[in-house]
View 1 (tube, each protein chain N blue to C red):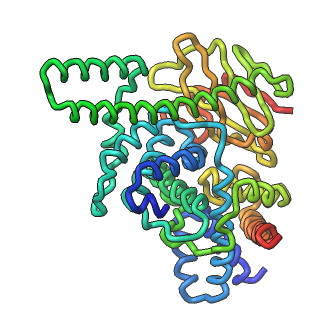
View 2 (view 1 turned 180 degrees about the vertical axis):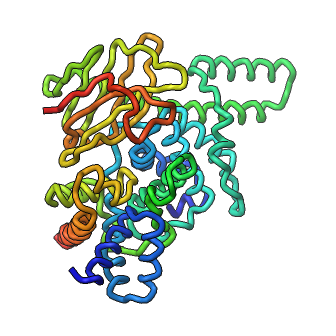
Length: 170
Length: 259
């Protein structure tokens, strides 16, 4: 990122090569539209080029995934005929909490930690983040009461935290 | 469960980004006043962000996308820290023509010939040719990576360890976490419509929307689905309005259980 901040196009290209599938994957999961996902991918990378200082420290992949999710939700919101309350509210990516312990956690470690969760906790977490839907929509799709969904999300995130803390210290 | 425990649950859902705007606003206000909930948010938000890492899939953006982005980046690569972000729409509107390598080579040769005849600055033409070569090299790298993905797709389709689920006019193929819809005879969708894939994730009761696409003129479509195939228990296909639907609005072309 330091080289990208110095306007090094080849460094930016390497960054694109490393993360474009992640960015595109997040956008595609939320928008379910190939053209829209490409537009979001383009917007995210061009924004990164024009404002490379917006990422300060922590896990870059997690940060760019959140930025992409927020951008995709913005697109969904602008195109949607649905009431505002039916779409999830983006959590500001500018307010990323610095967690240096997780800076080098990779997708394999996260998949491993998620796989350790009971399905009843893993599913609502994945649906909430990756499908860009509200907990109310998760409850509707799964037929599980709203309060139960919320409790399972919290329990799942706490377990995920413990598993990833363990992965860092191992 | 007391009221504060319920608020802590809301904080977790907020950290994940799955609260609708009105509830999210309430949680934000509560976080200002409640240290315990702030601590919970600080603990769970980084974990929720990490979930995004698992979204990387076999699906790739088109090869043209990188060319479009890098063209813009290289134009802007001179020191200019105050530059504003070019909009995606602006850049998308100018879709560059990617020439085959021989065409680029021929163009470079023609440039060299003309400049020698008219004694135009040799340095200038050399610089231009070098720029073309750099651009061609970047495109070649992109093509190579695209070919790599295509090779993986073909390997998955041909692999004897892939699971195949026959549907009318094609099949759904699962290879580990990768999932494809491979159609040989899919009629073109009506004007203003597209095909949309649907997936049923383990533990859920309703289909979730997946990608939209149209087959080529021969009725062929090979579509990698972005979902993790290990967690998908059924795949369906239906005709939907352009842009896709949140729920199927037509009788599915097929529904297949991935047993």
